[in-house]
Image 1 (cartoon, rainbow, N blue to C red):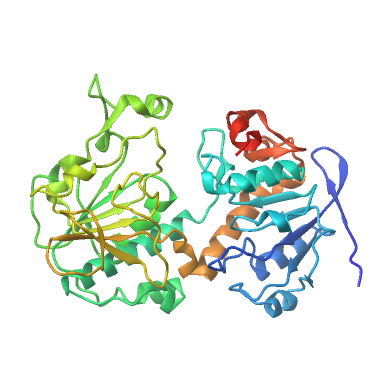
Image 2 (cartoon, rainbow, N blue to C red; image 1 turned 180 degrees about the horizontal axis):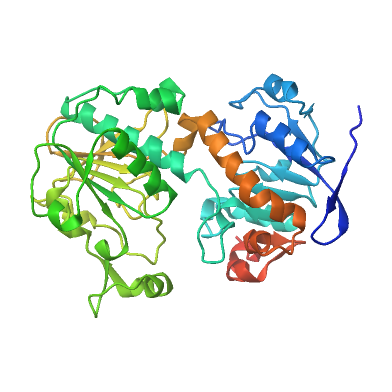
Length: 421
């Protein structure tokens, strides 16, 4: 069977663009079941843009089945080589990349991650236009879309689950056992939490998801100074951003723009909160130039009160140095012995260990909800600029490579992309 490549009239530039969008099958292991566009969203988009065609590669793993796409009028194919644009979620294996195409997915290459260097080289050698979701930003640097909100939701849930189980205080089901955000929230209606103090870090979508769960669990918000001064008879959290986490090494001040330009000039002041925190929900963006929240030598000290850490942004050996590697959805928590710093089984009672929740694909526990959220933002903020053309600022800022070369904004990756192994 052949499929027609349809035409879209671009009214902004008064020109005609041939375009077919394909949803690729996820091939990373363990399987990720999320999708960039749900069947209903595909149908709505095609109705809104007569002539635009969306097809999907057959997949046994999607949270929305092939039949659900067919019912929505989306053809299911085994070969997407006729598509102009290919949408995925996770990294695509190099051997299945189709040369000369435009891809959207999370490539995890902008930080020059060693484990994805082969992928970066494959994108270059196959002349692929790589538009990374993570790099789709507004002019001020704010991310346009992502799964961060649901990472925060599930990560906060898992952190609370781990705390209750470690201390034998209450029980929560795993999010992936429920598979619905609405059903997840229903479990909180009758949940009565003990007094505990939670530190929430971060200011982006991940943090907003964490705060959403704090609200639904009826955990009270406390200002940072009150948090380190008082104890409470009910569960509380404090939200730590920017100036509450970092301080210039010389001036003792915090300026957001200067911090982002010169992060090495700043030190972490999170140590102020460690003696007052039972559970850390970590949602901050981190790279190697930014100070860790704390260092390993602080963990054996008597005032290290934290017994559970939900490292939701999950940078192994990153902002949380006790993160010794990602955990899995089916086995989300591991313990760290506070004295030896060795990995041990989780949920050991007492304060001899710190339990770490470090799942790196948290939104996959609520894949249908997370996919609807992501697809809605793609349709709202990205689809229009995409149809407008690749010279659109939003699209251009997110284009890592094109035609076998890095774009100027990513020229710092030259050795990573072209150097010898």
